[in-house]
Every structure is written in structure tokens, then in C-alpha cells.
Length: 454
Image (tube, rainbow, N blue to C red; front, side):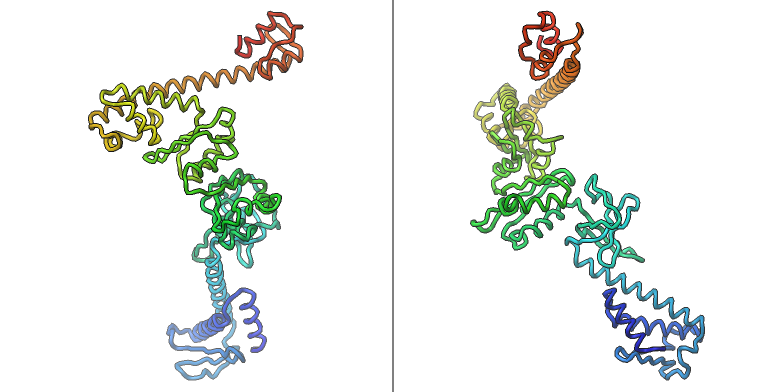
């Protein structure tokens, strides 16, 4: 047995696989004991002991405490095979323990690995000396990697699954963006700027609320960077995902207003009993406030922790007036009581129905019977209002479809009576403006009728 060569191999394994050399020597000793027991066909675990000098590699094999006369080389092929199998298994166990211990300390950190392949929708990534996987649920929608691509991700979890260590990665988790900000914005890493709240829909949009403990440091400006350099690096890493950075404020009203940007908010009414914020925006700001498929208001609600309702001034006024008229039908309820409910953020019959009688008794000082009557009145009115709203929604949808169909037909230069010139079609599509005099009155009437304006 070439002892110096054996020790060099152990040193190389310990270094390459990050395993303590003492563990490898202990494995070697146990493997030699197993080989001796195999050769002598003994079941006594105490019969043989082995020690290996960690410096010279000298091996001492004892039987019942006495040195064994024969050298290990004389044990034969079967014992050698046992020695080999035990060594391989022990080395694998040590490597698995080392990987588990190493990666357990790195949970929540960003790591960079190399994409290998997809298995059942999960992406397999090599990080350092270990294979990790990213489930489909932790991937950014629409993102694909090819074998050999660099993958930057968050170490989300590490599990000991018996024969292997499962390392779970993520690019969709909100903490991934937090760690990217720590990398790109030194003030975040140094805790001068604090990320107070975050809401994310991976691959589409993220809202992040930040504040600064140093009055000289602008939290939003520092995160954006000079000409957007810092935020651009993060957006590029996320393949174009939009990131809204908003200023944190302890006032819920101001925070909600900031979270709904770029929309301009006219008024906010908070109902603490329901955890609901009723936000009033102008008609021209409504689509901005709601966002594509409701994304802006949905993320704002998650960021602030409030259930956010967006209304136009007309809808808000109509709801308040209906609430006032409904509850004042109850004997003993005054306008001052209605004012108090409105001040508490209960601005519709739906709110009164949801909040229940107990709150009305404690806040308005009315009797339980009166409170129950108020809730019953509000509940009955709420059903009527809901039916009206549903009907109006269906009518608006039907009208929209008719207008779209009419616009398509006019764009093609067609009407029920025949072709229409381009100027007439353009005028109709752009809002049903006056039709040029070259068309006949009957054509005017038909075009207006198609657009729902006749």
C-alpha cells in the first residue's frame, strides 16, 4: 500500500468536496474493520479495531487488542471489495452531510449556478458542487433557460431527503428582489434604507415600499440610482419585470396614495372595522389606478395591507347618498349618526351590512333593536343596488361590444346601406364626431345608429 499516495488522495478529496480530512480517515478505519470482519467471517463488532496515522498514513489493525500478523493486502478479493463499497458509501454520506450543512447556512442568499436541464417542469441547476432544482412554481412565468446558461437565484430551502440533499431555488419569491436590491444598492445592504413592505406578481410587476433612517438620503432616489442605473440592473436581471418604488409612510392614507401611483388620488376613506380603504379617483385616472387586469390596485392592497376599493367621485357620492337615505328611514337615526358612520369609513349600504349590529350599538349608542333594523334595511338595499350594478355592467358590456363591432365595420368602409368613405369611418371611430357634408342624411343617421348615438 502506497501510504503517501493514499494520504495525497485523501487530501485531494477533502479539499475538492469540502469534507473534513479527519472524517475521511475515520471512514478509512471503519472500512478496514469491515474488510477484516468479512475475511474472518465474524459478527463481533468489537473484535477488530483500526487506527491510521493522519500524518504518515501508517495503519495499525488490531484483533482483540493485539496486532494482526497478516497485512491487509492478504485479505483477498472479497474483503477488498467490501472495503471499497464501505469507503464509497462513507464518502457519499460525508459529502451529503457537508453539502447539507453548507447550504443550510446559505438559505435566503443569492447564488449563481449553471442550468443543466428540465425535469418535469423543474429546472436543474448546478451550484458549486451540488445539484439544486427550481420548481415550476418558483420560476418566473415565460422564462426559459438553455443548458449552460448562467442562473442567478435565491436559495429558498434545503431538505435532507435521506439518500440526497434537496436544494430548492427560486426566482419568483419576493425575497429574491430584496437580495438584488442589497447587491445593487449599498444603502440597502448597510441598512440605511429599509425595505418596509413588498408585493410581487413574478414576471409582471412588483411594488416595494422603502424608507431611510438618514434624512440626508432619499430612499426612492437611491434605489433608482443615477439615471435609473441601479433599478435598470435589477429589471434586466428580471427580464423586464416592472418595479414600482414607493415612499413608505406610517400614515395609511399617504401610503395607499403612494402605492397607487402613477394614478392621482382625490380622496381616501378608511374603515378600520373592515380593514377597507375606499379610494376616490377622477374618471381619467380610473384605469391607471386599477391597472392592467386590476394589477395595480391588487399589488397596492397587498403592499399596504388594506382591502382597496377604487371609485369615481360620482360612484362615491351615489353610494354615500344611498347609505344616508337608507339608514335615516329607521326611526331614531339622525343625520349626525350617518355623518359619524361616514367619518368611520362606512360609505355604502354594503359596509353597513358587513360591519354588523354590534359596531353600530357601540359607535352610535343606539339600541340593539335599532341597530338590527339598520342592518336589515342596509342589507335589503344592498341587494337592490347589487342587482342594479350588475344590470348596468351587462348593459355597458353589451354597448361596448356593439361599438367595437360598429367600429370594425366602419373601418372596413361598410354600413347596412353600403360603403362609407374613410373620413366618415375615422370620425365614427374617434368618437362619433360630425360627419362631413358629403354624406347624405340617411348615411349620417345610419352611422350614428350603429355607434349607439342615434
